[in-house]
Length: 197
Length: 187
Length: 189
Figure (cartoon, rainbow over the protein chains, first blue to last red):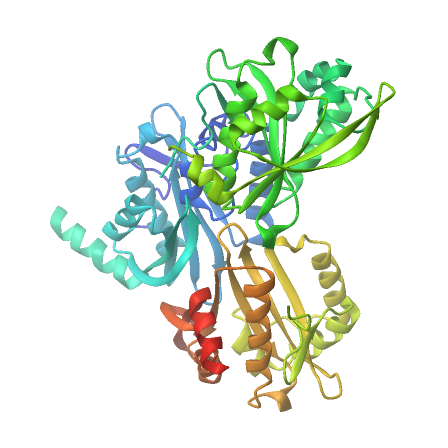
C-alpha cells in the first residue's frame, strides 16, 4: 500500500459522502427495524421519519465539519452507487490517537455479502494510515453475537465487559468493548500480504 | 430478539412525517366527535401548519419527550391513527399512553386494540417500563372496552371531570403493570 | 424513607448557580495534576466568563441523561468538588459516575468516598438504577482504591487509551450492580 492507493475504493463497495436527496428515505426505512437500532445504539429504539433523517444528516455533516472528531462515510455499491450502510470513526481524541468505530449494513438482505468486511478493511486503513491512530474501539452488546464475531475476525480483542448494562426484552446483557491496536492491525495485514505473494 | 417489535396483526407503528401526516391529522380534527373523544381541551380544529410545527417540535426533543408513532394498516398501508407514550417520571418507569384512530370508517375494526398491544410490548420490552397508565372519558365506551381487552385495569375515576353538552362525565384512570402484562402476553 | 438523601457524614451534594461553579472550574482546571486525573482532553484554560456560558447552556439540557451536583463539606459548607452521573440510560437502568475534588486539602480524608456513598444511594434509591459504572485512569491508584472500597468491581481495561508524558496508560472500567451495592450496605450496617 502506498500514498497513491485509493483510500475509499473497494472491489464491491466504496466509502462515499451522504446523498441528502436519496439517502434519507432509505435510512428511514432501515430505522423501522428496531433490531438494527438496538445493535447500534443504547438509547430507546425509535424509528425516524424521512424528515428526521434529513435533519440528522445535516447535523452529522455539521459535526464532521466543525468538531474535527468525526468521520462519517456512507457505504455504497460500486456499480450502482446505492446506499448499503454507513461506517464512522467517532470520538477521536487526537492527543492520544484513539477513537471509536461504528458500522452498519442497513438492509438484512444485503448482509453476509462481503460489503461490511470491505468497508471495515477500508476504514481500518483510513484510521491507521491516514488518521494515524494508535487504537480503535468498538462497543457491541452481548445480544449481538454476529457483530462480536465480525470484529473478532478482524483482530479486535474483548477488553471491557460492563456487566448487565443492557436490559432488553426482560433480559440483561453485558455491554462489551472491543479494541484493536495499530500494531496488531499491521501484524495481521503483513500476514495477509505474505499469503498473497 | 424480537425484530418485529413494531408489528402487530393488523397494524404496524411507524415514525411521523411532519408534512405528510399533519395534513391527515388536520382532516380528522374537522370531525368534532373525534376531537371530543380524544381531548379534554375545547374542540378547536388546528391548521396544517400548526400541526406540522407541533410534530416537528416534539421530534426535536432528544431523548424523545413522547414516543409517538403513526398507525398504519398492514393491508393497504393506510394511515389510520397515532399512538404514543408520554411522561417524565423516569425513575419510576411509568408512562402515559394515548391513542387515536382518525376516521369513523376505521373505528371498531380492532386497529386500536392491535396498536395498543404493539405499544405495550414496546413499553415493556424496549423501554423496560414497570407500568403504563392512561386516562379516558366515561362517554367513550368503545375505547374503554378496547383498553380492557388490551389488559388495562380500572383504577379509579375523577367524578364529573368533564362538562360537555350540559352533562358531567367522569375521567377514568386505568393502568397495567409489567407483571400483569407478562401474565397476559402469550408471545 | 430517607429524606436526607443528599447528605452524608462529611459532605452534602448541592445544586449551584453557574457563576459559582464557573469560578471553581476555572480555578481547578489550572491545576493540571488534578485535571489529568479527571480528564483526557488536552487542557484549555477557559475564563470564568466562558465557563459560565458553558454551564448555563448545560443547565438548559434535559436532566434525563445525567445529573450534576457540587460537593460541599458539611463543616463550613465549603465547595470542594463535584460529582455527577452521565451517559444515563433510564430504560437500561445504567449510568456512569464521575467525581473530582478540586480543593487539594480535602483529598485523602474520606470526603470523596463519602460523596460517592451518597451518590450511589441517590442512584439506586431515587433514580432506581440497576448499575453504576465508572472510568478511572491507570495512573490514579488513590481513586482506584477508593472505588474498590465503595464496592466497585473492575470490568476491564481499554489498552493504551492515554498517551501522556511519553507513556501509554489504560482506562480502567469498574461497575457496581444493585445487588452488590445492597449486599455491601448490609455488611456496613
